[in-house]
Length: 277
Image (cartoon, rainbow, N blue to C red; front, side):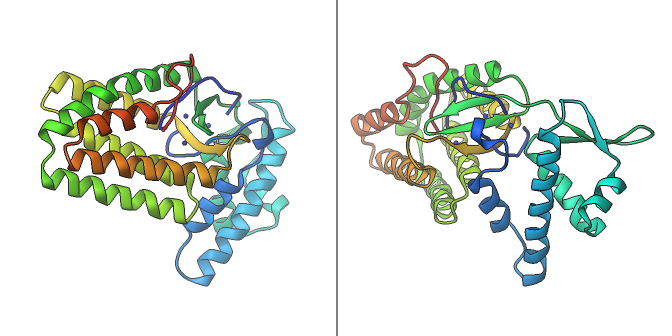
């Protein structure tokens, strides 16, 4: 599918990966920074990760000049063309796969292929890159948004101090993602927060439906990419503060404040096919 939510989009993203727009045919700055932030702690792994990112961009450039489904070459042919070690090339292929640009097929006639472009779903001031059709994910986001007020009402009545403490731990993870400018990690933490709020509900059908919707959205999201209306770092920082305020309202049993904030959270709900995180 940043939602928290979704809408109609352009083309692009898949499972535990990240999003893009027309100009994002190559990885976004957010995706590059997220990849390097996830690198190992020593200089050596970081250097290899940096080289793998460069090779991944080479592969994506090759794939984007081909038709979806075209064979780009064998793993060894492409590795030799890129002039890197096997380990670095395998990591580069993994990066390109995670962004929905290439696919790998084993066996005779296998190799690296240009992947069909995935769909985009609008998510506030970001887009989610998906591994499949955007229609089912957009629908899941809209239904999820509609259920948010019901779960907030349940949390106001039933959230224990331990529940609130766990929500605040996730808020801290969101703050760290903002600090590192890792929009994909931010959205994943965002979804965990919503799942944690849903877990408080005593209503099994509501809780189960909501968690299933979250799983569907997350399962098809490859990446989170920016759009031009508001810089993505500013957007996720703003969304972090909004979610922190929601948890504060739950902690203080402030029903009016919590419902006002969750309505603000779903500001694009009135627009067909739109969504927020």
